[in-house]
Length: 375
Image 1 (tube, rainbow, N blue to C red):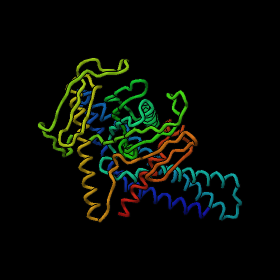
Image 2: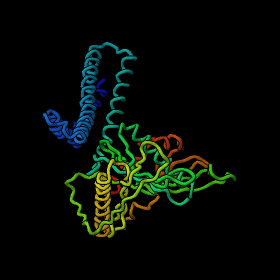
Image 3: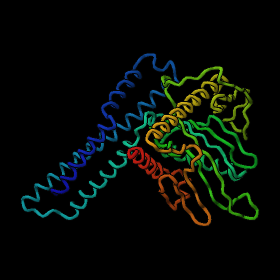
Image 4: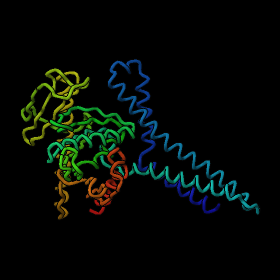
């Protein structure tokens, strides 16, 4: 019992230090501020803003509750172990079932802490933000377009598991099957922190369902991920650098397809970055959303330049994440998903394509933190 009590004390200290790193008290203050806003008489006058604040408050409340609940469980278990230790010191032999149960509870609490400690890996400025994720079909024709749609489904399933909302801002359907591209706005706490690991080229090897001869095909898709930036983010966009096109969106039908000439395409001439949005109710809303995405992409481009410059000063060469092969999904002649940056791999291709991505994301974040620290 003495060792178990020491382990619990150690776990309590680790929880305390991690909570400090995550600025848990700052989260409490932030939640109080949001709750004060929610109590104001005019709170629901702007329903979109009210919903956003309510969602932020709910996410903060849930995160704080997880840490508070873990702390209480540790204290409760410490009290039980202390009582058992007193019994043991009086010469009473403890029941093996009781000892096993106490040790089992400790291991459960360690597991809970490990999941929460994962948040420490989110140390970039906008990790807590919503994300905008775009999938582009690459080389491989119909197979590549089908692969792009499979990736979209994978990310939607992952979002469901995190209880995040995902909205398609733009979708370009394929000819025979699949999609040419899709842009998803993903709303949820730490969405960008998790999803930034997905940026890069994703490669699929399988027997093509579109090949009458059942030959093995390799398909590629590019995934781009940017954070949703706050209005205060300092990114300058000159009007003269923009070309704005309005067009009628195309789609396979259904209530979500925009049927008016309100879809917007914005091209940033200096960089060649193109952003489209077709899901909002009006042309102006589509333009505003497209500008937000463009702002995030330009911000990320500047960040990449800054990292490259810092690496050059250290005498290093950093390959850009865009265009780098992120992950391979092999379904024939064997089954394996492998991340080429971290070397993490699994044979569970189906579960990964069904949205089970956290192991890959965690290994990426740990690898990124390790390589950044070593640099």
